[in-house]
Length: 176
Image (cartoon, rainbow, N blue to C red; front, side, top):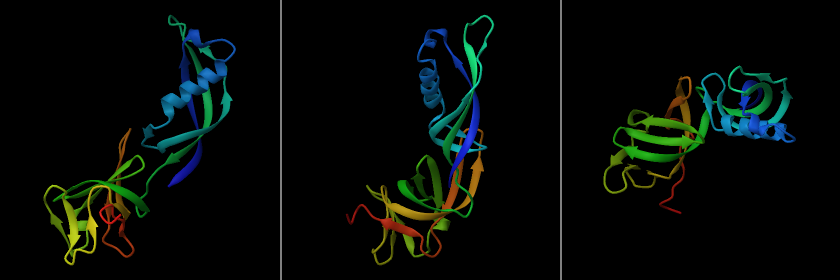
C-alpha cells in the first residue's frame, strides 16, 4: 500500500555547499540520502514530493558542519497482511519461489502453491500444472496475497500465497 506522509530529518551539510544554492544542495542531499531507503516504522521511501520546512541551521562544534531540521512530504510503500499484490518471480526452487513487488521481496512456499502444481527441475526450474497449461518460472508475473510480514529496522520481509481464488500467474514470459 502506498501512503503520502510527512517526515522529519536532521540533515548535515558541509560548509562548501553554503552559498546561493544552499536550499537546492540541501534538497539534493535529502533526496540522495532518503529515497530508496526503508524504515521499519514507515516502509520504503519511494519519492520525496515536497519540502514543507527547513529550520535554522545549528553549527556542529569542531567540524564546521551545519545541522538543518528538514520537514518533507514523501510517498512510502508498506505492504500489509492480507494485501493482494502483483509481483515478478525472481527465483524458483523446490522450496517455493521468490518474487519482487517493487522493493519488497516475497517468498511463496511450495505449501502455499496450489496442489495441482509440481516442481520441475532443469535448466529453467518451474512449477507446472499437471496438464502443462500454467507455468511459474523466472520472470513470470504473479498475483499473490501477503499472509505475513516481518519488519526489521531497515527491511521488510513478506510471505505470500497463490493458493486462493483469482491468484496465480497473470503473465507468462514463455508464452509471450
